[in-house]
Length: 193
Image (spheres, rainbow, N blue to C red):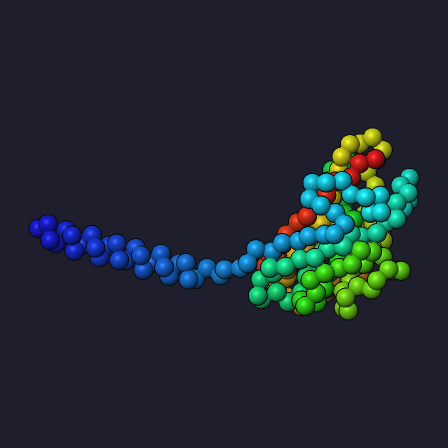
């Protein structure tokens, strides 16, 4: 009787191991994406170089340099957004919405979000920010409102192009980004006036 019990336990253990192994093999494994910048550091204050010029702000309005790595193998394009969740609007503030970045791009130079700065990668497209412009708009929290967080997120997407209307809002673009996202990574910097 003990021998039958032992065989039954061994068979159950083998079955569990086989099922577990098949589950592990079935789950795709991606390298973790990372993002870095020579201009901004996680949890640290940004320079006035990245402050908006207008709305009472006097900065240079330059997007920060960004580099990323570790995207999933099936990445067909990238997107970059910049968002302030602390803006006193009830819905935050979109500072940058850039999509259709070719999959072989892993770096954007400082100022890439401005029309008169280094050109964006071929095929890339900027959408309307909450400043009402299709370009990067720097930090400009209300004077005395405290520290705001600025989230620069790089998305790895499963499609080469997001086909969106030219007047698409940041919210609509965000919907499509999340629908096609393979992975994403965020660098959060701070700013205060």
